[in-house]
Amino acid sequence: MPYTIVENDAGKWCVYKKGEDGGPEGETLGCHDTQEEAQDQIAAIETNEAEKAAAPEPEQEQPPEQEPPKVIVTLPSAVIQVREGRVLSARNRQLIADAVKQSKEAVLALQKLLEETEPEEREEVVRSLQTVRAVSEDEDTVTVAGYGLVWGGRDLYKTFFTPKTDLWLDKLGTRHVVLYDHGFDHALRKEVVGESAEEKPNKVGLWVAAQLYKHNEYLAGLQELMKQGALGWSSGAVGHLAEI
Image 1 (cartoon, rainbow, N blue to C red):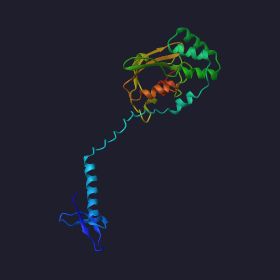
Image 2 (cartoon, rainbow, N blue to C red):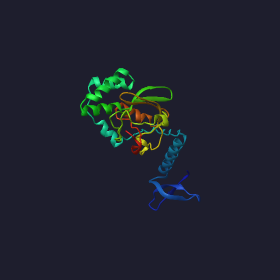
Image 3 (cartoon, rainbow, N blue to C red):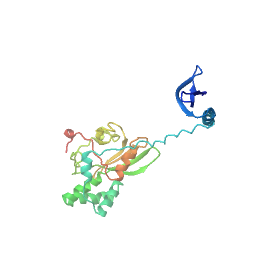
Image 4 (cartoon, rainbow, N blue to C red):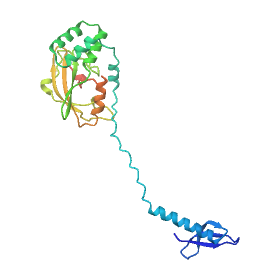
C-alpha cells in the first residue's frame, strides 16, 4: 500500500494512504514535527506489512470430531410401573434366570412357586420373568430371551393369559417382527428392531427368544434398558380377540 506525506497548516508532517490520483486519501495515520519522522513511520508501516505477508497463514482449527448421536429411548409408562417392584430373593432370582435359559428343573420349581406364593411376591416373579435379557450374540445380532406370557399373569398392557389361551401359534407361526413399545414410541415409531427366533410354551408361560439387529442405531439404547432390567416383553395381542 503506497503512502504519502503532507504538511498541514500547523506545520506538521502527516502520513496518509496515497489515493489513485496521487494525493492523500482518508484519515491521517499520524503527524510529526519533521518530515524525517513521517518517513520513519512509513518505513515502519511497510516493514510490518511485509512481515505479515511473509508469515505463513495460521492453521485453521479443525472442528472436533462429533460423537455419534446418543440414542435416548423413552420408557412407556406401563413399563415404568412394572419395573417399580420389590426386590426378589436371591433364590427366586436364580430360578428365574435358569428358567429363561430353559432349565426344566427351574421351570417346574417356578410353576410351584407361582401356584403357592403370596399375590405380591407372585406379581414380582411375573414381572421379572417378563424382563428381556440378552443371552448371546453373533456378528449381526444380539439374542434376547424371556417370557412373553406368564400363565395367570398379565402382560405389560394388562392382557390376561392361561395355559388354555389359544395363542394361534399354528396360524401365525413363530417368526414375527420385534417393535419397541408396540410402535408407539415417538423416536422409533414402526422401526423394526429385530425378529422373534423361537416361541415355546411350557409350564410357566410362553418362552420367547428374539434376535435384535446390530445394525440398528437404537440397539445401544435398548441394551442399556436391558442392563437396568427396564425392558419387558408384551404379547402384542389384540385384546378383543384373546380367548382364555
